[in-house]
Amino acid sequence: MTLNPYLITSMRGKRDGIAGHSERRLAIVLPSGLFAGYLGGAACWALHKLGFANVPTTIVGFSAGALTGAFWVSGQLNDHVMNLALTYHDRNRDVVRPWRIGKIFDVDRVIDSIAQDFDLATFMASPINLLVGVATEGGHGELLDVKTAKPGPFDALKAAIAMPWPMFNRHIEVNGHLYGDQIFDPLPIEDIIKATNPTDVLIIANQPKRPIDEWRLSGADLALAALRLTAPEVAMKMLGRKARLRKALRFCEECPDINIGVLYPPSSSRGLTRDAESLRHAIIETAKATAEAFGEQLNISQVVRG
Image (cartoon, rainbow, N blue to C red; front, side, top):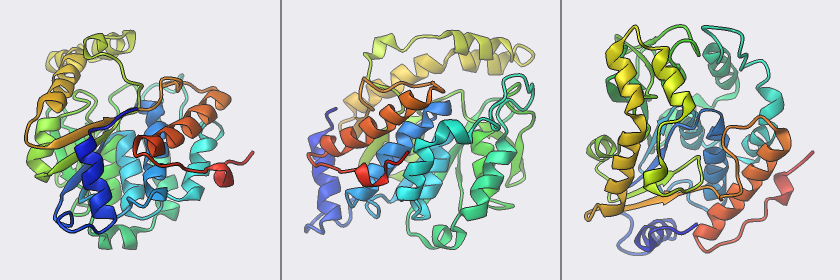
């Protein structure tokens, strides 16, 4: 994978303390990926190993990317988290149950599990901000500041992954409003730029690169839209997901004022799969490819077990 060379220079300069780079403002964007979110997690782990942990000013996460972003800000993207990714298949058998209508994806269980070991004190004290993408019941997208969210940060994270029915059965109250997963707009890049005022943006994708014109409606898109026909406005937003993604990617390619780069996993990786060996291969290859994109090497053998 190749990245915008100006973005690489900026990130390295801030990491290495080179004069003139300390005031750079990097926003790292972690788009939604459903059960392919482990690829974004592997890329983020690799960036930590390469010394970029304190480089971003803001992390912006959507759905699974919101959880990865939370671990980044709390300083917990460590070898333990990498091994959790490598055992993703075994750990999620009870979280995902296709026949459990209204709770196919058990959001409550996911957040409760994270909260047990989450370093909330370090998270709140970190200078890195975390914004997460959410949507109102009518499908309007917003960005929430997790650290200032009420009743608390875990409620904002829960809202960010609360996919619409039949995946989950309710919206989550945050700051006095009801929100769910912003599944309707996978990469609202212009809103992200307005909210973060960055000089540099690194988008960490969960799917291998494809030509923009190949981002078309899938069977899953049509199925999710059909399930929302009781709310026509929401259904139409669902059908427009890929068109908005194409527009966002074109904006990233053409934006003249900000260094924007998209870090894609290697083409050998697979997206939505529950095959344990395929998951393991994709995670390892994504971590290695992330290091290579920055012209560096990463030995991950010490954390690959089992």
